[in-house]
Length: 433
Ligand code: DLL
Image: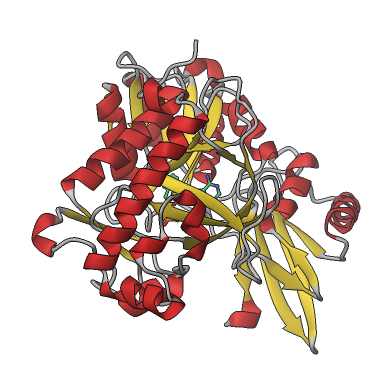
């Protein structure tokens, strides 16, 4: 049986959703015009005023915001409310340049937690469930967001945060956790540790997992589902818009419903900025129509995916986005060929390797090099060099047919690639160092 947290909105008719978006967008644009001088200036430069925005059909007239704008306006330049009305900040990990700091009023947090509650109920959660939140808590939005959603559903919430993997497994067993929330790479690591402890899927009560915050392939989903004996659901979001729960997967497990009463999604051509028709692949752009403290209009996420309004068997009517294949800035250009790390992951998992790999890109004598280091499973591990050479050759072939270029493959011993408790670092691009 499909469960909804807010059925009247999650299953509203397309006309109702459009009407709600129209009204909220008009109000939001006025709010931003009056309270966010940074964006008002952008609108003035484009010659747009709030009077030009009469419905969501006019969205395309508004200027984009990008990560560069967020950096320029850091820390307070994009706030829509006085600091005294804000109760929280969250922040991105900020591996490059300045961190993004996002502000929330109590109302913003309330709506964000509703979105996470929708995701938990879509994964089958009820107040009878025990929900273990193993995303990091703190500045990262994963822990706080799903913690809030879990409370709203009424689950018994175990706020373990990430790390201390054996203790995670102990809690799952001792407190009968039924839902696990963490990054997919951490879920895989928990599965691996369970195996080492001699535990199989029947030894734990988990039934569902809500995994996101990084790109993961369908092959990785199958792997995690088998090791943990669960259904694994995808969840998407970003700090700039709130955190997890911008979109989430339902029982159909075929794309994530965008919470369209809070966010309007568009797909654009990343080169030209032109809005693309439904079904086209491009860069995802979001407008937050209910956020008060940090209201972003036409924010370019750099995530690449497609949108579809095909009816969903779950009964939800909100538009679905495909799993982001990666970010425009994750995409590697190697000897002129576009490569997403997720394509490499697909090849490795299809050949029976675990999702423990690292992609090292460099430039030697003016030519790009791609070295994929892949961990063997303990069963594959051997000192027969002929065997290893044969395996490497098979992977080079598999990668060539997927990517159309030749990579070097190095098989490494089990456990030699560092495990991630949060977002995994898959790519080391030495050309940028
Ligand atoms: O990762 C929020 C989040 C927490 C989402 C927990 C889901 C679960 P940031 O750290 O700001 O926020 O990173 C946002 O992560 O633009 C995507 O590139 C990537 N991302 C998030 N979810 C997914 C997903 C959180 N399900 C950035 N699939 C986004 C692929 C994802 N990429």
